[in-house]
Image (cartoon, rainbow over all chains, first blue to last red; front, side, top):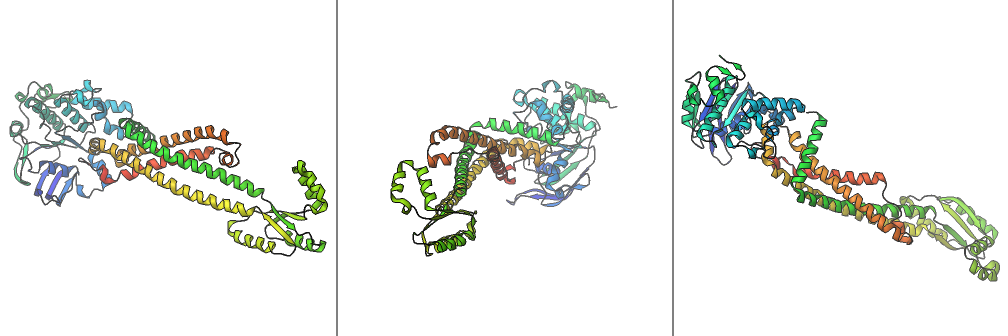
Length: 251
Length: 303
């Protein structure tokens, strides 16, 4: 699904962000990307959804070289990739519904369908009751869940998260991670950048470690499932651990 | 998203944008209103002046007065020359008797003066109605008039075309200056609107980044800003048209009795001209938005 062939990124200042990255991420895989600040995590993610282009090498997403996608066609690539950031990037003057329903609206769905898909996405993150709220009325965890709902609205094949738990406390971080695991269980490829080793070790999926722009380690997944005792207070996680979710029986 | 849905969205977002930065938006609207008001006023004055000149030209007299010693064959020869003149449409012989009757009719109180002097009072003349003389032929016409004035037996040639041509030259000058002034003012308006739209796009830079992130096209991202510029321009145009109408209604009745001012304010702009004035505001606003939304100005983190 995602392939990097000798990808390097050097900024005009001469600073090297990535250096000769080769990797392959299969469809439906959950992959952590970790490393110290400045290791190149964010740059690597930006290259996947074509916010930046590599200085050398090629990146294939679904067999397509993203660096060669014409500028006018980038929006169509991005509609297949959900992106979640540490700082949520919600539009403060718009309601939760309007934030989440933005893509359905530009895709031309009528108001009724916009509401239905937005409701469904918000229900998945447990915020369907906050559709009329504004971001300023939400907690940090709720804001991040709205951002996740927005990223999920178009059922993306790939979900990219750049330090999505960076602004959240431990409990909220776990809650958010398990939302991603929930999404992953539905077949979405997830790239999750974080420097939180505890969080990574507790989940046990594949881990790509970057150091000074180089791929220092590629640890394969150790677990097929995550332990239910990790955050038993989150109903979705408990349900997932037992093989059942509100989307159906996964066992 | 259908085109109509997109238009509705752009309009709504543009209105929100205007409301969000209401003071700077008002500044842009007022700038374009002043520019269009002055441009419209110039258009109004030049249109009225042009119409007046056209009327004067239609009524312009071309009279050739003959010397008293010209005999009948001499008059006939001159009459033939005038009748076959390049610009003559119609020619009428005015005898001293006819001239006297006209004078008495026009100035009854002075009739005695003419009567005292008998046949000698007024000369024989030819009155010609001329065709419209194209500007390119004016120099040839002037040469013809000079040639006529030099002919034996011609006492005087009274050609209104002389001063009408001078007024037309003045009119062209006023129009040229008007266009230059309007261009400068509209340039300033476009610049102001461009600045306001750039400011709005700066205020919305994070939203723009989010829009790009979720896959919004440039059309969708830029549409509201284009509409904001168009709205500012249209509102400025409407304000200018309204102010122009108000000033005209106030001034026109007061100057109606004045020959020059009355002529300059004889008629208001036509509905088509008013619509064009407002539309011009919209075009100027759109131009300002296009100018401000260069790719650089919208490129923000996330884009």
